[in-house]
Structures are given as C-alpha cells and as structure tokens.
Length: 137
Image (cartoon, rainbow, N blue to C red; front, side, top):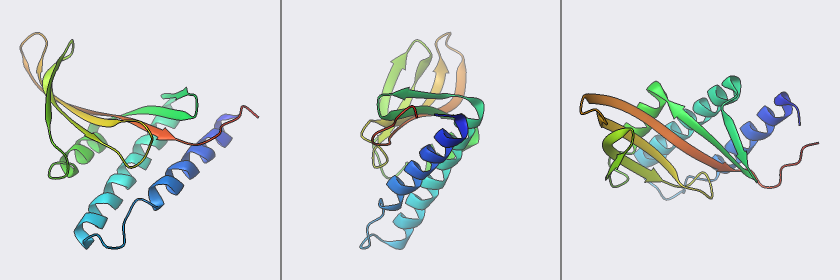
C-alpha cells in the first residue's frame, strides 16, 4: 500500500469512526466538544502521516499527538474523564484516558515534574484507531 492510499484509508477511517460518535440526545455543548476533539485528533493524524510517525499493529494504527493539539485535547477532556496520577522514567504527572475512536486505549499525559526533579509542562497524547481489515495491496 503506498503512502497516499494509506493516508486516504486512515483519513477515511477516522472520519467514518468519528462521524458516528455523537449521540442525538446529547446536549449541544457536548456535541461541540466531541466535534472539536475529533477535529484535533484528525489534525494529529495528518501530522503523524506527514512525518511518517504512524505505527501499524495488525488492524490498529497508533500515533502520537504532541504540542498544541495535544494540549487542547487534554483541556477539553478536563470535565469528561478522571485524572490519574502516574510516575514513569519521564517524570510524574496526570493521565486522562478516553475511548470512542478505537478499540484501544487513548490517553493524554501531562508531565509536571521531570525525572530529574525539575518542573515541566509537557502534554502528549497517544492514540489508537482501529481501521478494520488492512491489506498491503
């Protein structure tokens, strides 16, 4: 599968999966928030494809969202999901896990203290999208 076809397939997969994500009975502000998150995830995916930062694991496509888009997604999830504290080799901070766009777990991380003890404000999102059957043709 060439890069252009893969880009179109992934973009279509995101649009198709996310288009059914909103419920008709949900308040307008929730729909607007979900739409904005979907837009930001699509933007992250396009950047990841452009940079060649896509990992394929079976029918899942995994990619990372950094910088301003990740910060916006993290902030929009504020009142929707519970923060979990974590500690890793990168430092300590909070994590917000969410679903609705894949069969895997999507998480945004905010590192507030680096492993060397210095303060930080780093936000990154790790996202999964299930695309169904992918072939190499």
